[in-house]
Image 1 (tube, rainbow, N blue to C red):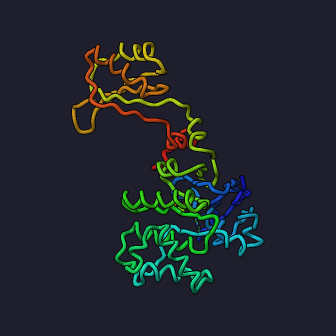
Image 2 (cartoon, rainbow, N blue to C red; image 1 turned 90 degrees about the vertical axis):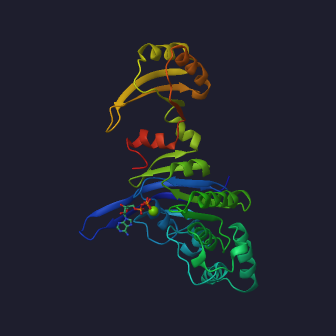
Length: 330
Ligand SMILES: Nc1ncnc2c1ncn2[C@@H]1O[C@H](COP(=O)(O)OP(=O)(O)OP(=O)(O)O)[C@@H](O)[C@H]1O
Ligand SMILES: [Mg+2]
């Protein structure tokens, strides 16, 4: 395994207008291996963009360094940057130019030109799957298509490491799907390495070989999705909506008679603005789906009416909640 990015104690302090300081990034360290998709997952304001801006040489670190392919962003910024493809959070394209003309413009900015650029633009249009729309003006593109052109612009100089800053924010689910597929293709078909930032745990969970969870400028946990989820334990949480019914005896039965069940609770709440009672049985179980038939047999035998069943497998959301006491979505 070759380390492509090594981030070492990187920190950034900003001074606000009123003279106050904010430590947006507080000395973070991580490495990315060649061929990996690594995600920085964290809520708004966690320090993701600041971290990435330092790695890509857009802002200077207050402390620390990052090496891309062994080249320091502080001491050898040009060499380091030549290995990095940047896909910024904001889309910056010329609406009155076609997709191809935009890519041509960005290519020239990288010092490319002639036949080599033209060939590379063809390749990039294939990667982002927009070859058939290359002559259309950007202003006629959907948000998701613009994002893909934005990604393409970052790929022109054949970087080894591509960073993408929340490329799916504000796009519809279908476009989002295509962007995520593009990220996979960069790794699987084009042997690129990807540094991805997001505040959406589903995305990080689906995409990443490894995830760093960032909060208040610090990485609070790092590992494969599986490793991170192990932190919250391996129990599934099952919810049975049952309304207002007597369940006391049943809870004991679940706990003692069904394999894998460790705990069963009943919680009843008045539904806002109505006289209805919202009763939910929460069951913690190892391999919750396997326990489900036995649980339902018990409710059936008891004549209990189960309106709905949901199985929550442990996820990165639960990891964030465990580590910070807060919800990632807040
Ligand atoms: N140029 C700046 N001047 C002052 N403060 C800044 C500057 N850039 C960022 N900050 C502050 O640093 C903190 C981290 O911001 P950053 O943009 O890195 O967060 P983020 O994780 O990218 O969030 P989001 O998910 O909203 O993009 C925030 O409190 C932000 O207000
Ligand atoms: Mg950001």
